[in-house]
Structures are given as structure tokens and as C-alpha cells.
Length: 516
Image (tube, rainbow, N blue to C red; front, side):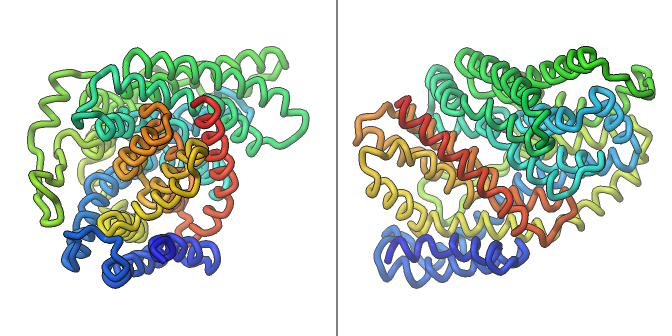
């Protein structure tokens, strides 16, 4: 009964979205209410709720969920879409589109370049949905169908999420499983390398799936296989070297840049080999190119400035103007913290705003675009706030722990095979690789000690599996539908993504089990 009640909110969410094809915002609100009712009546009655969990705790868990949803998730989503809307307003998106199409007339190469290369770079810099929202929107502007654009963006936004937002998920995981709560540089590097190894096969498979979905013709498959192998090999080599010797901050960023170079080189070589006639493409001056890319160049500059790479500058930003809220549900000195200067949302806003000015958009118009973007995200906002709040209630009432423990007890020595599934469940519920690591990192380490498996290896399995859960996380689905203007189609997009997410988690499970 503990398990049935604990899984009920998640099952309800899936049934409403898939079975009844209910909109994401309405489904999420009902799932949130269900979680609150289980926490209020079921958890105390059956005794799986912590002893200090009270009725008031449900309310404070909801408050924490709202805070976490707004700061920084919704702010980052808002600013990511705002940056794209600025490009639309200035018309410079047309220059970027023509440059992408100028690289190759091959649609599959265009898609892989956008969602795996550019999307991975965005994930490494900002995370929190930017790698879904921006590439999907650009694909639609290039003429691809909204459903396809959402699906390939979701599938591509998987491997890189373990090192998203300058490595926050892995750094958080390392701290969770460290003996004293603060991981050393060496421990972070080891776990980072483990994550890359566990995801290594998927670095070849996911690019091929993206290429296949774009072009399913038999004659294109040899080319697709070769390109997937090249991109996978380079991504794996660069990400592993970055993880093992630099840590969690740079694998996604450097790996994506390397992949972009390989894809462009492949496009050039195959075009010459096949004697493809170059279409007449408009030539742009360096000034025009800078103006077109200024939004993303400024975003990259500010993201790097706020990252650990900048050293003392990053330290200053992270310790200045930090709001700390002590909620009654917290123990000891724990507080909810939000850095006003160090969060990725501010970096995205500054990049978009300054880039917009460079592109000739007035301050008044830039603020009007921001207001319009806020209004356009109403439904997605309701969805994300409801889901994060549901996650908080399920965590504090003991539901999440019941589900994870039941899975661990049921699998025994085969647990490494299923360890990534726990991470995927965490991301599915919370929408965040980081949150999944917070929820289950210590559990994974504890089970590893019981069954005699390397603690860091099994901890890494949590974030590796979490990257697969990201594909079908309702929050990611909400971001995809918002950026593709497909609100109300969450169920359809989720149905199309589920097979790929299940395959992904199975592959990671096999890698974790056989390499353990």
C-alpha cells in the first residue's frame, strides 16, 4: 500500500496526459493535488512519513516548490525564449538560418548541427531547458514540423544534461556522496569520468537516431552511420578528457564545440565528394555576422564569466546579493538560496538585452518583448510550478524514498542494472538532473556499499540515468511545447518520446551493470 500510494501522483499524471490527452498544466495541477492528499492522509496513516512531518509541512513543501520553480527554472526558461524572441524582432534570426543552411543543404546535417552541436553547447552553458527551447524554435523557423522539432530536441537534450549549467548536476552529486558533504576536485573528476563512460555508447547512438528521424531513406543510412560514428568518437574523447582532467564544468561545452567542428567538416567534405553544387548564399560581412550572433556571443561571455572557470569573479558573483530563506520545513541552518548575480537567467537576460541593442532594437521594444514573453509562458509556468511543488511534497512526505527503496529491495544484486532507472524517475518527476541527484544520490551510494559495488560508480549511474529521464520529463515536454507553440499537445509529444527514453535507460543500465 505504501508503494501504491507513493506512485499514485506519478501514475495519475501519466494517465491524464497520455490516456485522457489532458493539457500539461491541468494534469500537473491535479497530480499536485493528489500528492498533497496522499501526504495529508496516506503517509501519516501508513507510517512512511518522517516523524517530524506535519500537515503544515505540506504547505511549506509547496512554498519551497514554488521558489525552486521560479528561481531559477522559470526565470531561465523565460530568458531563453526571450533571447530567441529578440532575434525574431531584429530579424537577425534570418542571418543565422541562412548560415546554417549555407553549411549544408542536407536536412539531417542541419538538424544534427542544431540539436546535438548547438543544443549541447546551450545545455553546457545554461541548462534548464535552453537546449530544448532555442534549437526547437530555430528548426521550426527553418521549415521543420513542430512535432518533429520538439521530439529531436528532447532526444538530443539527454547526454549533455549530466554536465549542464556548467556541471552543476555532477558537482551536486559529488557533494551528496562525499564523506563530509564537500567533494574534492579529484572526487568530482572521477565521478565525471564515470558518467562519460556510462553514457559512451549513447554518444554514438543518439546522433544516429537524430539523423535517422530526419532522413529515413535507405540510401542515406551509410552516410548517417559514418557521421554518427565520427560525432560520437569526437564527443566521447573530448568529454572524457575534459571530465577526467578538468572536472564537471566543461565536458558538455567542449564536447559540443568539437562536435560542431566535425559536423561542419563532414558537410564540406561530402559536398565536394558528391559534387554538390553550392547554392547562391548571401555573403555577410564580419560586422553583420557579429550582429546576428551577438545575442549568443554575449550569453556565452556572461555564462563563462559566472562559471568556476573565471575563478575569483565567479566567487564574487556567487557570494554577493544572495537571498537566503529559512523555511520551517528545513532542519538546522539549511536555507533556500538564490544568487541574483550568479544565476543563468541573469546571464541570458544580459546577453539578450545587450545583443538586442547591438541589433538595433530599442530599449522600449526590448521591454515590450519581455512582457509578451512572460504572458506567453502562463500555461508552462503553471505546469512547472505544479510539478516542482509535487516533487517537494513527495520528497518530504517520504513517497520518493518509498519508491526508490522498493526498487532497490526488489532487485538485489541486479541493482546496478536498475540504478539508472531510479535516476530517470527522479528527473521525470522533478525535471532536473540536479534534483534527481539530490533525491537519490545518497541512496545510490548506500546501496553500493551494501552490495559491494564502487560507490562513485553507482552514484554516477544516477545522473547517467537521469539524463534519459530528461527526455520525457513533463517539464521538458512543457518547455518543448512552449517553444514550438504547441500548448495542449504535451500528451502527443510525450507519447512520441517515450520509446526513445526507455531504450536510453535500458542502454545505460546495461553499461552500468556490465562495467561495474
